[in-house]
Image (cartoon, rainbow, N blue to C red; front, side, top):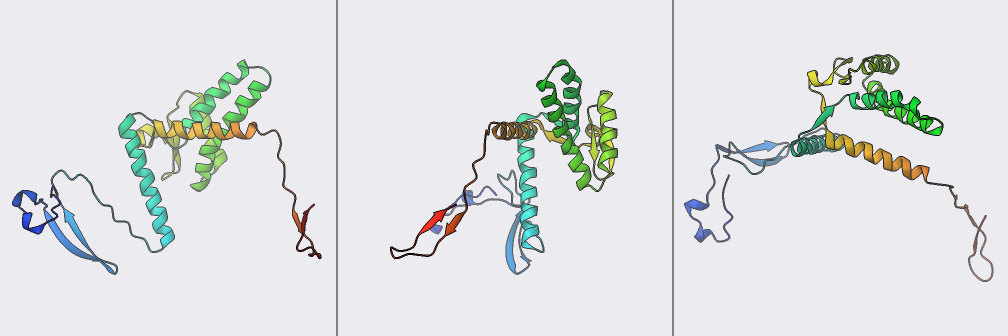
Amino acid sequence: TGAKIVTNFDDLTPNDLGTAGVVEERKIGEDRMVFVKDCKNPKSVSILIRAGLERQLDEAERALNDAIMNLISLIQNMKYVPGGGATEMALASVIKKEAPKYPGKEQLAMLAFAETLEMIPRILAENSGLEPVEILTELRTKHESGQHGYGIEVFSGKVQDMFKVGVIEPLKVKEQALKSGFEAAAMILRIDDVIAAARRKETKPGKGGPESSFE
């Protein structure tokens, strides 16, 4: 509202007051809340989330927070890539084309990585109730012909151009997701061996007090 904090009521002046179009009190559930609306150049806003269950409320809050963070990343970078698994399919298509140029184990690693990338649209199709084999086949056909903007439009259940339907993702978020995947895979591959701790076996206490041993 543009109002200023005044510690002493006697020092209050008209210049300390803010402006708002509407100030009203509403009852939301069992609570009463004051809503301040139609402010000029508001520095902050509040979003009220409601749900029938606490679990639903937590999920809605998480989804809203993710959406806001993605929007912030997009505004800061202003670069984006197609969503709906299109980016992963495009990367997989390019890697598969380049793999034959590398002999030996490098080629196998590249093909395995391409298959891993294709798991993203596969899981997206499964979670949307679609047939993953048919969707992936259609996506491969599109991307092999150079149409790298095509992905899964979950609401229609069809493979469409993500740019035309407005399904995009911030480049920064996508880069971070891929980077985290690289780091996790590299960390696992560096593990030479796993030492399993032996199970602890309790024994009856002797004269000297309680004892325990390990198998």
